Length: 125
Image (cartoon, rainbow, N blue to C red; front, side):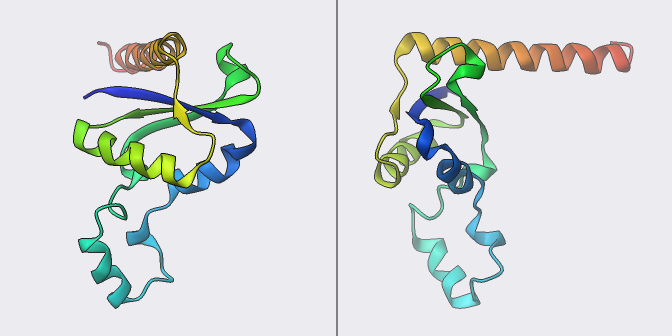
């Protein structure tokens, strides 16, 4: 699956985090009729919490301290709709420049590899 990285102003990071974690199907305030309408709403069914994602501040990545970076690893159909939904919902969000995108993807890959190596060591792999 492809991975992409977005950047946004750090001032929008808290709102973005809530947005990414929201799953309308787990929202107890929605009644059955509202849930039924969700099934037909393509944008509402772009649910980030069901995908692999990571939101980090730029300073922790050695990038701009004024930016937050969002990593998403999902299939291309999801990413196409996600791009539209993110840009509609957040004023400052945009695809990260290629160098920054590759740096963040490398960090995530390294973290996964270290995690897998740790699990392997625990279970004798």
